[in-house]
Image (spheres, rainbow, N blue to C red):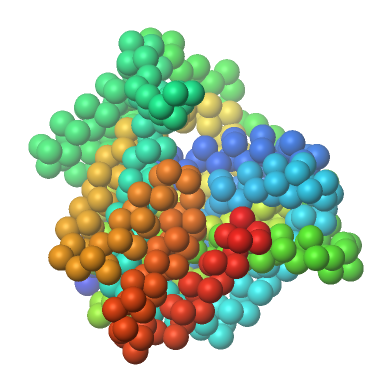
Length: 431
């Protein structure tokens, strides 16, 4: 097992990997609660979506751990489940069965692109400075989510965002968890982020801010309402509207996953010569999870940027993903325990992980304006638009433009030209 996951080469241990897996799971476990709530508004059965969410996370995390040896958790994407429900089903009036079939078709296309190594080629030709910008932007995005979940940052009609009520019990609990985690990290305590989450949970239950579960074991909801419906509606996807939906799923999911892979590879030190090792295998695992997830009955899956929480604890190999998969499997039987994993518990971890990822900003060449502008736009637009793909897209439009203005046409890889044009079309006609 140690040799298979390259423990010695990556300087890790079973303890580090296990703590990392549990930490990542706790950081992304909210998807088990939120995904069924969001997708049920499209008419889908909430219980079936819960089971489908868990199963897709189990399979996806297991595949990326074994095939690619990456410490990444895969589960239904938060942004794409909202797009599925509110834009496609409610906004466009498309039945959830047909929308889910669109997710399935997009997943099949993903698998083909992955097996042909087209996705891997695209990721590898992204300029080094932009990769560091993507990792940094994801850090800012994660931290923003953490501040929002903690109630430290709230919406404001006049200024868009403002500081929240720090004296409210829930926000105070998150602030306590944030501070205790910082203290453990700066004192060099391994697993400080994980222990911080545990301590915050215990304190929350002690002060009755977190409900103590009334039961431990729960029944596994049936998949019957959603399983396999994609095969019934394959003839209904050839309208212009559905084709546009499939294209959107492709673009957003592709670059959400690409961003997560770049962030993880940068943080773990796996990126060599501006290339991500085993990227093709990771993308095959991700796309396979998307296809199976659609068959089970959930919207598009993606590699979770919250995986960096586990990496901060010490996760370096696919064994971390195996632990994530096991945790999701356990929740199928012990779903009532999910109630203790509140936003106040996970928010401190997201803020701290975001700050650690922001260290990538020092690797960007800030002396060249043609790099500074697209890199900055990537970084700032991820949190401002709540979309990794949008930030990447805007940066990919500006990067060729800045070099073209300097008549440095040959320095731009042809794929970057293609991506720039695709994103212009995406923003103009789809997004």
